[in-house]
Structure formats: structure tokens, C-alpha cells
Amino acid sequence: MRKKTICTDIRCRKKHSAIGKVGVAALITVSMTGLTYPVHAFAEETAEQHVAQGDVDSQDQNLETNVADPVDEAKRAAGKRVYQAAKMVDAQIQNLPNLTTQQTNDFSNQVNSEVMKALASINATQTPDDAMKAGDAGVVAIEGVLKEAKEADEKILENERHEAIATIKKKMKSISNTIATSELPQAVKDSLTKSLNDQTDEAIHAIKSANSIKAIDNAKADGLASLDKVAQDVQAAIVANKPLEQAKKEAIEAVEAAGQKAHEKLDTLTHLTHDEYKRFSDMIDNQVKTSIDAINQATTSQQTRECAEEGVAALDSIVQMACNLDAQNAENNETIDPDLPKTFDASGLASGLAAAAGTILSALGIKSKK
Image (cartoon, rainbow, N blue to C red):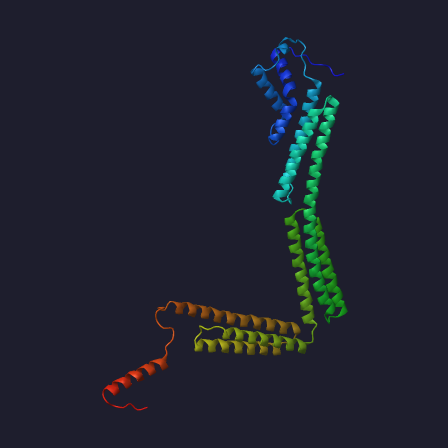
């Protein structure tokens, strides 16, 4: 049996007696304040207030061996453990990086709810052993909320990982189909396929190892960039292994198509003068001719591809210059007095002058000639 401690100081005896009266009520009050005040300190402070106010029974002042009730002591100890567990669990929940604000708040509310349940159970106990068991059960329930929160946090990560891996695999499948349907030599296909598989495996491993949404996004972006590089290697290999005459034919077709689109765009620019329009049209035709000449002089499939790409880029530049001038002309036109007519109707003016002349000749008795 535990040895009882004897209080020799009258104020000490009064305080212990008061703590016995307010112990569990103090615990419940603490839980309602958001678990921000130590349970034992709260109980002692409340007891001090009772002593100061003279609320302790007068008979306690005459007891030479007054001791704290062991049941109340057990309740206070159990409540303190519940409070400390709740404080620790709530801090961990707040630090889970992937939960939404609503989820974080919901789990925090569950912690507070378990605290209230535990304190009510502790309050209802009649023995120190039962008080401690009630406290243990409360701690287990609170830690159970933390487990649920961590599982929810990890589920969010798993969903992000799943979507990221699906994106990588979709990209990989597209590149793989390009390799399979190409006319590349089998040895080249095998080499490109190995590179594609290696980059895919690396990306998936990085995604699976990521422990935050940001890290997953970064791993996915890096993986897609690596696969883009493989896709470029595939296209380069296709061009390099393509017969020269076929490569030239396709390159010329690409330049001619770009020239046609450039002319179509030029036709939509309504603020160019006739001379401006003709100048840009001639520039387009000259660029197409220059690019085709360069393609015909190329000696490798790679050179033909480069000539075509440079030609298309030059045509785009010409169209952009035409668009800029058209926009500038439109802006200048808007600065003209809006009350002035936009166009000059010469036929209307001639008709009006003829009518006026006819009226004057009629007044003079002269017939006008039709």
C-alpha cells in the first residue's frame, strides 16, 4: 500500500482538500479551452482560489494528517496523460503536409472529442486503477485519430503518385508506338527502346520515392523531360535513316505548306497598303524558293530536315512582321478624325455635281446634253 504523505502546513492541507473537490471538473474545463493549460497546474491554481476564498470545510483546518484522496490523484494523473497525448497528437496532425485545411480541422476536432470522452470516463471511475485504465483508453483513442490522419495523408500521396505514374506511362507508350511503327533498323529500335524503358523506370522510381505532393510533381516533370529527350532521339534517328530523296521530298512539301499558310495569313491583314502587301508576298515567295534550293543541295537527310526547319522559321518571321505593320497601320487609322468619312465616294460626288449643273443650265434656259 502506498504511504500517505502528511501535510504539516495548514495552507498545504487546505489546498490538497480543495484539489480533491475540483480535480476532474478542472480537467474537463481544460479540455474545453483547447488543451492549452496544464491540467495539474490548473487544478492547483483553482485550489488556491478556493483556499483564498475560504471555501474549504472548516474541519479540514483541524486535521493534523489530512492527505489528498488517492482516487483524485489517480484521476488527475490520468487526465494529465490524456492532455499530453492530445497535445502531441494535434501537433503532428497540424504538420501533416498533404491534408486539406478542412481535413486538418476535422481530425483536430476528433482529438478534442476523444479528450472529452476520456475525461468523462475518468471522472466516473471509483478507484485509482479504474482511473488509470480510463486514461489509457483515452490515450489509445487519441492516438487512433492520429493513425487515421496519417492514413488519409498517405492516401492523398498515393493518389498523386498513381496519377503521375499514369502520365509517365502514357507518354512512354506513345513513344514506344512511334519506334515500333518506324522503318528503323532493328538494332536502332532496340537501342531506343532500351533508353525509353530506362528513363521510364527512373521516373517511376523517383515518383514512388517522393514524400510530398511537390516532390511528386517535380519527379513527374523531370520524368516527362527525360522522355521528351528520348522522343527527340527517335525523330532524329528516323530522319537519319530515311532515304535522302524521300527526306528531300518531305522537306520541300513542308516548306511549301508553310509558304501557303503564310500567304493565307497575309490575305487576312486588311490594313496593309497595296505596296506593303506585295512586298510581303514577294518575301514569302522568295523565302520558299531559297529554302527549296537549300534542301535540293543537301547531302544528308539531317541537312534536309534542318533546311526545312530554318525555312519554316523564316516564313513565320515574315508573317509576324506583316502582322506588326498591319496592327500599326490600324492604330494610325484610328487617330484620324472620326467625324470625317472613312471613304471617298467619287461616283456620288459626280452625280451630285451633274445634278447641280443641270439645275443651273435649266435656269438659264439651256438644255444640258445627256
